[in-house]
Amino acid sequence: MTHDTHSHASSTSGGAAVAVFLLADIAPRFRWWGYARFVVQRFQMRSIPGLVFFKVMGSGFDGGFSLKPSASRQALFCVFQDEACADQFLASDTANRYSSRSLEFCTAKMRAYSCKGTWSGQQIDVTATEPDFGPIATLTRASIRPSRAWAFWRMQPASEVSLNNAADCLLATGVGEAPLLRQATFSLWGSVQAMDRYARSGAHLAAIRAAYEGQFFSESMFVRFVPLALSGQWRGRHYG
Image (cartoon, rainbow, N blue to C red):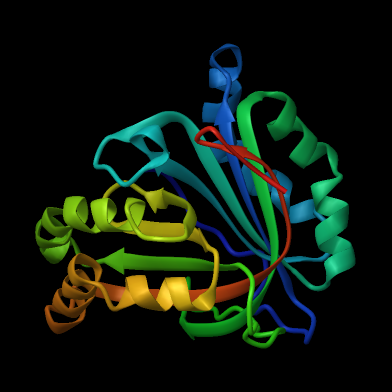
């Protein structure tokens, strides 16, 4: 997984923050355009109205969780000061360029209802309450200590299998800011209960316990979101 990390502002201040997660599988004839996004996109994002935090990321092979990077799959995670700015971004030339150059393209617009930890020293503002029913989304990210990277990746295959086989997991993809050491997982679940069942399951629970007991991470964050809108297709499945 690849590449760099930047934040647009020092905090996600404001009581109505809305997050956008964008996934794109760049078509072969636009592959060089896609590679350039890892450098160019970080500078272009700085002029987007209402953007207070963002990450430009790559993905594991086939959109999964792998030491081998994907040559085509990419992601953007953005936090905006309000929903109007998020909607403006989703209708912007930036989002449209990704969409028109991709074999698959998917977006989620969300409000956080729980946030633990930090990402580049920042938290995501909680602007929603936990839903009684319906889907939720989660974002887990970690900066892995170099000395613990091998131990972390040894546990990853079992965790990936358990996630892909988890009941009511509607979408799961591995992304990252930098190869091996700055990793994230985005997932969509049919309910809070489904996510909680997975969180307490064997391989995932064992990996989390080992990671924290072994002090694998120099920084980590776990966020749960209420989806406001889902649209597009990812790994053959349609959303919206």
